[in-house]
Amino acid sequence: MERALKRARAELHHVESEELIGKLEERDEATLAILRTHRLDKKSLNTLRDVLADDRERRAAPLDGAPYLLAPREAVHNMAALAAEQLPAQRGAAAQVLSTLNQARGEVERLQGQLSAAAAPEDAVTLLTRLESANHQLAALEAVARGLDERAASLDLELRRAQTELDRKLRAATDARQASQASRRHVRRRAGAGCSPPFRSG
Image (cartoon, rainbow, N blue to C red):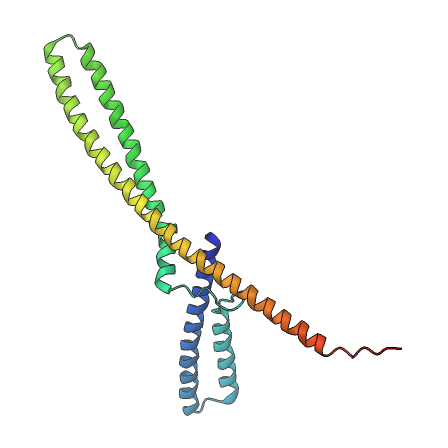
């Protein structure tokens, strides 16, 4: 699945760089045309043209072969954001809440132990009040933890579905390319066989 996302991002980067280069070519040609009307000498124009062409070339994003996944731009950006930002952030938040939750559980257990050992009634009342507060905090943290877990599971499912669809497109595109290559090889073999000299008996 990672290979499919990597390919989709590379294709999108290539397409976006081609779009940018196209816009820059239009801008550069318009700039050169304006300078020509101001009678800039030919040598300076050629130098500037070369500089602008080099700048466009540096912005190019080469791609291994022609684009074949052609995943929608928004889908690729969403998948990348899910994989690199949203899901890790959600899991990190869940881990922090889980740590706080474990501390709260420890506090509840500690207060319960003190309450069992309390000798004086006033100590018991104080401990009961603290225990009630700790239990409320524990319940609130458990609710937050459940919400974060559900959100993380939802994001993970969304990412897996998108990756599965992209992976399916990658397999289909790969199969189509292999079939096309096999067909071309078959045509070349038949063409080669047709050009063979006829057999002559002695």
